[in-house]
Length: 356
Ligand SMILES: Nc1ncnc2c1ncn2[C@@H]1O[C@H](COP(=O)(O)OP(=O)(O)OP(=O)(O)O)[C@@H](O)[C@H]1O
Ligand SMILES: [Mg+2]
View 1 (cartoon, protein in one colour):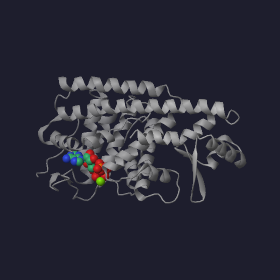
View 2 (cartoon, rainbow, N blue to C red):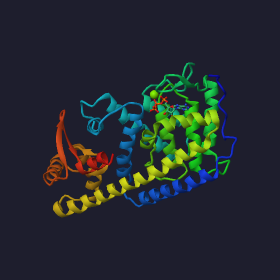
View 3 (cartoon, helix red, strand yellow):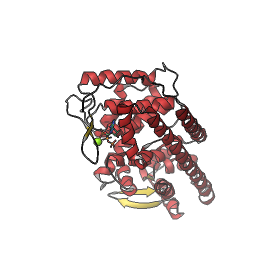
């Protein structure tokens, strides 16, 4: 393998071919529908958290960090006994939230932010690659297919070019096409020793938020990539070796279309469930119902006595009473994990789990 230099952006070819534009229209339509619906939902946190947990699980699964929802639930509630894999998935989710908050607050996506995100995923401070020796191999044969740029100076130069491409709209390419270009380029720069795939998948959603194609970070390609994994690796490689941009762009745009449709279905189901539970609690437990209580029940998949105490500013005794009533009426199921009693919102949990 001769080490060819990775070209800077923008690509020096016509990307918006007829085939690409056709798929682009479909992707944009599906995405706009998702955004439109999500925008009408009052409590965004519920939505984001529920969608994000599946993404954290899928994206980590691509890296062979495999866990179950039950295990994850333990890690989320900080109960003891969660597996290392589940803890990694929780870190991935933390990284996603952190990136989202940075982009929302600063309206820009920088190299420094990307480095910060990768630190949270990998839980080490190795940062941008300094030592040579990183190669990408064919998973099956072990053969080296690509040697990414080496040396911190060159990597930083490429990243700064990428940063400009992300933040400055100096060409009038559609943002979804740019997303596919950015993903290819980021993975090809491969700036870190590890975690490049996961960081790159987070950049995708942050870019959608940055360009205001989505308000909440709820569109993720990981499950699509899992389903179409060999094409994913093949096409990354063919952009480099054959300038096969067209197929790569269509691949990513199809992923956006399919995933937007799937996510819209999930989001609708979550919304229906929140509303159903709201009505039922009002009917069956009118004395304890409040909007704040409902929000707390959907904040995560579980809740604890202390969360109610704090969130509703009530005494421990009252919090315990509320939770016991909710459990008796079948809205929650509880389990003692370690020293603490954890109350699970089983309906939300099942919805997210079995949708999968
Ligand atoms: N031939 C290739 N050209 C460019 N990028 C590639 C190629 N093959 C794989 N990649 C990218 O490298 C990523 C894997 O890199 P790395 O192991 O650093 O990331 P990860 O997050 O640990 O792994 P994963 O993506 O498997 O979860 C892949 O997800 C893919 O995006
Ligand atoms: Mg890896």
